[in-house]
Image (cartoon, rainbow, N blue to C red):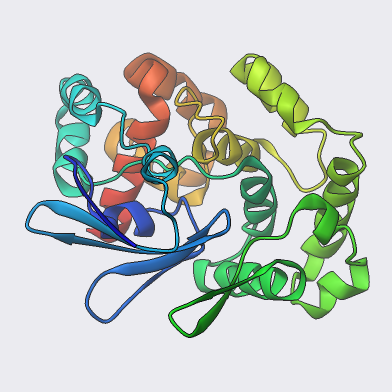
Length: 281
């Protein structure tokens, strides 16, 4: 199955390399292949069109996952007026589009991401999917869907340790148990405010403020009014706006205040442009 969609503000490299997802890998021809839900998809841009090739026959599911119905042009027009830093970052990463990733998968993925690097995060998620997820065969290759809470609840702390989770093993085990048992209801998060949803997420083992904000922004909860702050973001914001000689003295409170005042309800998207620009360029 191949679906072609004309879409502005979509560049596969920008989408898949900006730090929001871990199941997409670059092919030699510059396209990306990955797994979302129970589908395998290859994504390529040619002659201004996005070409999706895979085992997903639903154009609606593809449009939803890649957030293709959202008017990024108007978002960019609004953010470009903030200042030259943001304007330059958008010019570099204007193909970024924030995905609607499955909430459960995003929670576990970003717990795994704590104090970790992207190749290692990808490897752990791949091993978890292979051990507990459903096998998907596509073009004579085997892929694996991310396991459901019920499937992953079969794993013990020791099993997670063997898969290379390190200190995160107990946290993933505890959070999986809580969600699989129904003790923590993911559906409630869709119905409440961003601040309330953040508070709820902080009840989960392994979820601190930065991980909570990543979950809110990068999952299908789609909260653009959060500004995940890590070492990179602190460095970027200090370099561009705060100019403290010692970046370690810049508090998260100071950064959050700046984000609220400068970027408002679109601060999550602004963060992605700034982070990607300074890291890549």
